[in-house]
Length: 364
Ligand SMILES: Cc1ncc(COP(=O)(O)O)c(C=O)c1O
Image: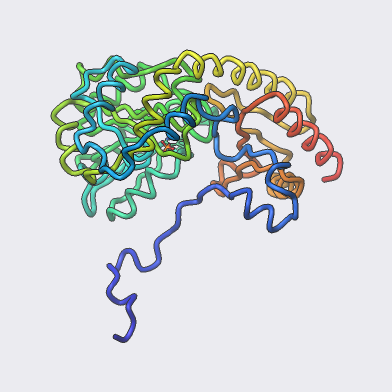
């Protein structure tokens, strides 16, 4: 064989990788700082961890040698209870990332288009690129709000899916219900990604019965602290759900994820009680950042906040924070030059971040 890479599909020979979070292990190797001393504010994870019921449930479960249920019978019932949606409208996925991929597989072919109001979550474009779709980025306005008129202007019948993160990642602002309803009148699938729903309180799940082209995504990675177990869900028209159930990998939900999901929902009240302290820290961080010269915090309805840093200094500050073991996220979109995104956790994390940023701002 001359070169095994010649066998790879043309469009996948040099794919653009997903810009995934840097791990604490990588940073530890670079800085010598032990992971236990780092502050991880780059993944919008849940700093409180999962429900205390998850560990024992996983430890005592004795069916790991058995395949999971491809029909997700128990899971769909549990998720129906949690979301209020009918079980036949629900599909569970290996993270909502998998559902994004399944949506693309179901609706988007080579040469089709997706629209994403940019900047936004990277997985929409990532999955669409693998499907050889064209990604139409419609810039958000100066406040990062949706430009509905522009979306409608660029829409054409090749536009198969429009992705709306609500609230948006990385900017933290929600869309309005009116904006979403306006988009639902277009002849495309409208994905409303509610990954941060529990921090924001708004939802479009109640619109599923009225709009067959609506798909709402949720995840257990944020509010339930299960990012490492990969549990997401989609709520959609039951006919679409049935098709998605048919094309998904049969055993996409592993048994540990199933058990963790059930244990989390049994402990829902505790998990939900951890939301308010995060919101409190979010508002505290906003006030603290407003007092720092040259720093502009962007109001957020999620468990993270975007900060605009002094002009020309964003990347330097990002690296200086990392050198102190504080992981945040920076972006190479032109409209987000000098911005970092900071996940909100507990008070000690907000304090550690604020202290470090204050000191770094004095040096740059
Ligand atoms: C808007 C948005 N959607 C989906 C996801 C992915 O969630 P999951 O961990 O369920 O794949 C994220 C993760 O950060 C996100 O920000």
